[in-house]
Image (tube, rainbow, N blue to C red):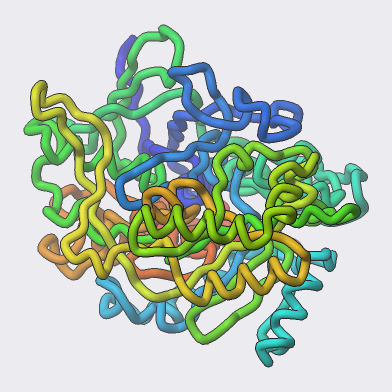
Length: 548
């Protein structure tokens, strides 16, 4: 099969890739989006996360779902796969970071980011259908009690989420894009946002940015993984691919310009591999893989054995409590029946060593053996468990590199390194533990965390960021303020890898806004764009641009 040529090839269909595909298609370009995961319709999602084949991603053992866990030395990473990227599995929330984010890190001096990104945040909210969660759940009530106890009631509020509420389970024609988008169904608060929305209410990217991109000409090639890249003799780049599973032939594509948008866990291995390849991208900055960070998270599962408790109803995250100027906590849920994580949980037991943590777990169990036994044997784990997600803006960074087998020299995948252990992400934060214990006391429950934290002291994150950060030069960053890779014109990184400081909040909206800004700097393919006035009530960012 001959090499097909495109104006732009986009690797990944998450928030950066889908935004880019839509805006470039609007501007008249021929666009190909390559996604290693599958395309999902509503009925393709699992009914619970016990259906591992449809929920988890590990195609080598037959798992072809939307969720992947990657276990690294210094961090356990939870991330998404599929057409629509992380939007398929994320928790819908769309917060804007505080001012400090825009002024810190390697990008802080490159632009007046807060002011410059403000209109793009607004566009992103309109496109993603941001609205306030209308339902108060048991978890929200408990969180409000904690806010009152702390004297911070004014810092507690419902989340802004990417969900179509409408009337529960009622289908309506597109309510967002003047009929240009797909039909939608009102949310029924089943709580299954993170296992894939089978209702059709979650505003995933395949219902907005990516849907519009495909409708107007973008091509999406699913179940395909990019393996290599190299500069093209005639200009631009050649992208080599292989099927994610099955025995289809490898293929290659060429493009004038390429966007890497596969998230940290997709973009980092590719860039690191290509930097080592003399025929790939050897002049990449030595900063590739540096300044990888999370939102400094702590994840807890508070299990309450009391009869009648049901924490599973609502959208994935329903409220937020800002505990101080740089920290907050959110109640999170899975839908009824989704109890897979009970197999990976252990007693929450902070401590400096594995022995201390194991001893602490035994002591905690001994203090309340009946409550623990009842909690660990609840019938429906999701109904009886409130997940708590704590985040803060304080920094903790590490490096990603390619691991090699010392005997064979073959690549073994991503590994993490730290120069200063005190700067590494931490699994245990005193305030987070205090908040989890407060919540547990109020619901007669027990606090748990992933067993990797108790045994290994390794923190978990659903928001892996950085590794291809912005800088003033190739010595200080991988990309410039326009997201273009130093030394490789026409190659861009527009995903979580480009986040160059800790936002301290769920990053989906920020990635979307950054992609909007990056695409606003790309000229139309044709020289004389004509701007038609949008019809009343339409979004000028989606309806007004017509390329002449």
